Image 1 (tube, rainbow, N blue to C red):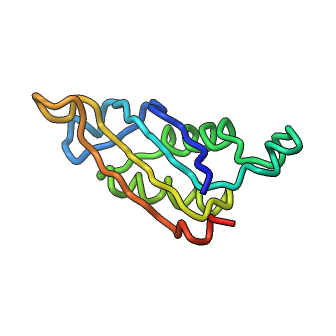
Image 2: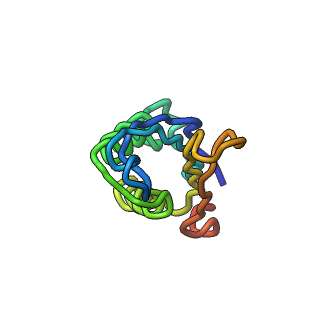
Length: 122
């Protein structure tokens, strides 16, 4: 299985359960690993045959910047759903973190996997 990935995509958004969090934009960070067969793209050297990570990043930035979630779990689930449906990704692992959310910790968040690795393999 081939993996197309994005690391440390930073996006400012409204996220959190506390009143003060509903009034300020905070930065979240995303790491994505997405199953995609890159062999045809490698053979043809044509971006139309691969998963365009720039298009994925732009779509997630637009979605997250425009959202106002209480929980990182909800944001992660909906972001994963967008990638799987709109970009035809059969499997992904998404890490969503909130830097500085807990004193003494660099960040906190969730890691989710959705889909099937078997259907991503040829």
